[in-house]
Image (cartoon, rainbow, N blue to C red):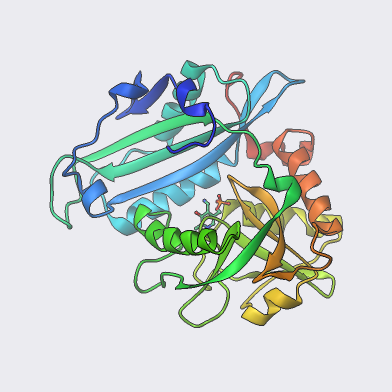
Length: 312
Ligand code: PMP
């Protein structure tokens, strides 16, 4: 895991093939199909520290594991670990490292050892956790550009699954943005409508309602996106899933990017055209604050989305 802070040095224990081992002892074969042919799927989770309760809670664990199972089944692997086994690996790893702060968890299932492009085993797995604070751009927002790369399509390398192979496309778009001095990229799909960013989904405010590309627009079925679609209407903020045209980016009154890592990150410009006044908008701020209450256990009606780690 590449980190920009000191979190790597604080990882003591990881789980590999359901055993806790020191991070430095984890190994993968250099001929593993997981590495050579991207026969690897993963999930990224966040666990939030609640100082009042002295508890660390994983957000929407079951939903991430459901998507994990789905991703695994699409790329085909022999006897992959069950959701219960991965849950145990995650809880064991968090507890072994004794993290009492916001933490990011990455679970991977991959084909290890040596094999062809079609190898479906031997299947290996890993879980790694690291401290990860909220990103600074949660407050400041980021400028995005529309990348000239197209999103990998449903019939080529489906975006709906969280497979490492899809992230080559994300990497190209992300590097495109970086070269242009932007903080993020928008990918259009093969049909030319808006899909998502390299590692998150998009929402745009138009005429009092947020629109977001639908699940056939070439997106990962994001759990944060689903969370926002569920929590916004009770606040009186309408949400619409539909095809989104590129010019709608330039007409947006507010916009944000979302994902487990970024949570809800305001977008302040698309292609150097300011979104609204060029600063994070009030409805985006309202959603951020509500999201924060939910992930930190301050909204009892959404308590079922939190899995306690130490009290488990
Ligand atoms: N799209 C892509 C391509 C992603 O990598 C991610 C991050 N997992 C997302 C969307 C957001 O998904 P989630 O909210 O489930 O983290």
